Image 1: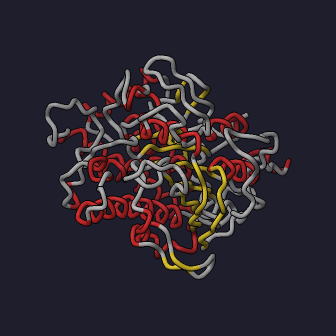
Image 2 (image 1 turned 120 degrees about the vertical axis):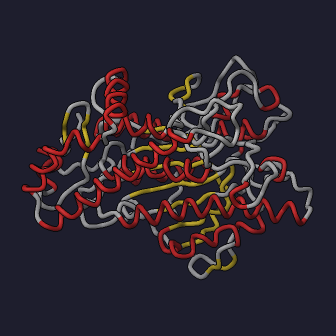
Image 3 (image 1 turned 180 degrees about the vertical axis):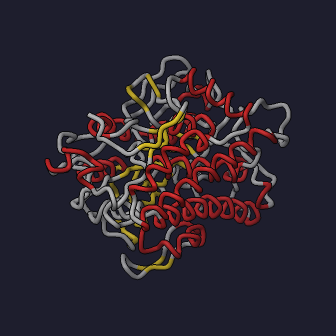
Length: 451
């Protein structure tokens, strides 16, 4: 059953709204609120959001790991952008992605690191005979997806996905997907911000949404123009504080729509030989920010409580010209201990962390229905399936857990977890969501309780 939410409606538009104090939690959620729901819900009645974010090619461990003890620690150089958000995160050390190890299968560490990150299941090495496992986000979505408009949201910043065989004979499906419905079926992520925007705010079938978008383009109008009458009626129902909140929210939606329109107008001049879809910014930095913004809007409006995002596929050889690095990331990650190449990898890792920190800051600035922030009521994992990019190792993989999970997580810590499966973390997170029927997952051995 989908809980009743507040929407602004108009021709071809259905704008989901954040929660308002004027309406109240009981009216917002409907009769379910009085039934004291516990699944993916905080003690105060607010939703708990869960996201899994993937960055490629491992790290330079010496620049990643903090120094110090659990509560008194100094962030590693790559993690310095998190300094202002330090009290909202946990740096987890000692988690292993063992299913990504070779174990006689030869090369393919990028496919294995990427494909196993959320499944904990060994991959079948074949370009055509795909076999993986159900990913943790989909296990969660099976149990809580009925609470929201969309059971889950899959995003990617890879606009040009490949098919067939990729890394050392492994199917490209392993490298371009982190979310899996079942052993043979990945949940294809959306890389086009426009299509995500239309899915969240357009109404009707996919074909109807496309037609409505074309109409808005021809008339040079915003999607908000089609809900203006409903917005005015809503304003009259809201107290001053919530009226201001609605203005801020709609302004944010309009700004994002404008950024997408700008991307559609200017296309992708960086590589004219690549057919980049309309709506995908030419700038990778802009693309990453827009996709983070899409996730924030989905969480803010309780359109979904489960999301994944592939920032780039493992093995990605993307250059980072915008920070002065023209060499490919993958090539640099095999630095062979050369100082100049190590320095550039550290700068790339730091850039990814800066984007993550900015996202966390935006989550923390948005008030939720219970007066806490969206970040407080979230559990956000950022990590990579490879540990040391130079060695293709999968032991001690880099993992950050952000957000307080509605008050259930103890943040502001650097935790030495010993040597445990990464999947133990996922089981620990499901317990915080009120999911009690998932006793094992992937290669898990137990629930991680120290989070």
